[in-house]
Length: 149
Image (cartoon, rainbow, N blue to C red):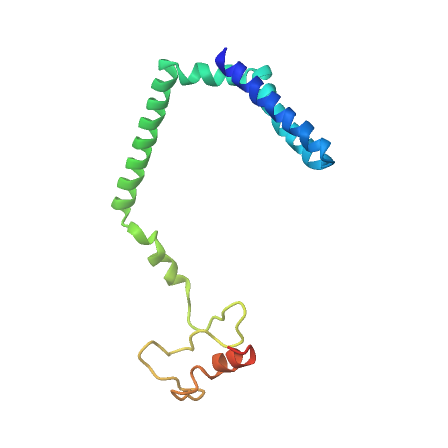
């Protein structure tokens, strides 16, 4: 009963503001305010407000929320235990994904192979020259100079 009265008062105030806005010849804003002010009355008329108030003050509804929270807690706990047992851990199984990179494959937008055959981390590059220490950032410096940075 109180919720319906409050919603009706909010709607009446909103419609009053819409009338004042329309009097100032801002019709688009007035129509938008009127639309927003009619929402509480619509919710009361459809019964949503009554359902929400019945749910908020119902011990059975709160017990149901408690059961749902317990089910979620059980689900989250079993997922955590399952992940710990399989050894995926915090990396999410990324260790298994690195095995799919093969030497000689190319990146999607690359024209040179990502890893050449027989070339590892510690081995020097056999083809092409190694850039000098000052040339590492020359491209970046050129771009920054071009933009005046």
